[in-house]
Length: 377
Ligand SMILES: *Cc1c(COP(=O)(O)O)cnc(C)c1O
Image 1 (spheres, rainbow, N blue to C red):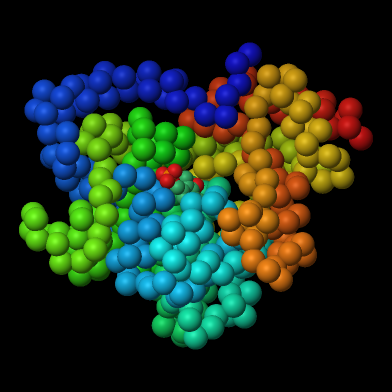
Image 2 (cartoon, protein in one colour):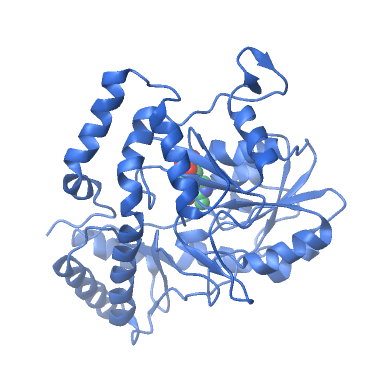
């Protein structure tokens, strides 16, 4: 049985005709840059997540960088970011000469530990970048409260959680990426809404900020060849936008398919003490970009190897916390500085989850996980 982390070919085959036609349409009109496919996708995504404007860009990392440029962050400004995340979150900060300030994550939900944010705020702090890791929102209500109190910007890294929904204590619900000042997402092929190459977007609920973000992504110009601010060149390709226009109507269905796979894993592993199933935060839906377990009492790497031997891939997101990365290490921030993230890097394991997984494939994975655990005990 062939098991993959994601099955992009299988997903494509079901919508092949529409995808191919949408690509052909772009080619026929030769509107490869900023054509109607881009503007209609931006509008369709803005409607889907309910925000004022979506601005396409080249990838999720660019989206984060453009967000920080849009908010006027300057070299030396400090930006608070979880230490257990993909490198892009911190990279977009550092590349602008801003200072990433790391905060540990909560062990249950893998998202930033909001109780530790205020300790890290200094006179130089300008923004917080929560990451909705693995498909579930960080505690945005608390984060927005802290941000309001200290007058900070909030940039949501929504690369793994497009379509997840946050619930406030007053009952209001908002889509991930629309709660902070700017939301950023990625359409990397394996993301919940993936294109056929690189792509990304900013999600903005404020007209002025949206205008500025659009200018920055386009060489700082509003009128061609008139450059009012320093920008960059970051565009969502028209062919990618055309593909995304075909796929967006399926996003909710895709996320539901992931939720069903997750539920089955939860059920299968709930009584196995060596597998700690991912906990659902009370304030968020979970769109399971990853199904990430914590391995307890046995060696995570040995379990990974045993699964690999049976043809079952699994991934470690992420094997090295950011404060241990050479590019992001700082004197005085060594082992023990972020104990939860350091521990997670040794025990997390993401199992295959995708929109096309069959019951038979999943039963095979579950039975092999159980077998491997017995052998390792
Ligand atoms: C994928 C991802 C990004 C970056 O997206 P790219 O499109 O690959 O640049 C940023 N943050 C997180 C958490 C991601 O998973």
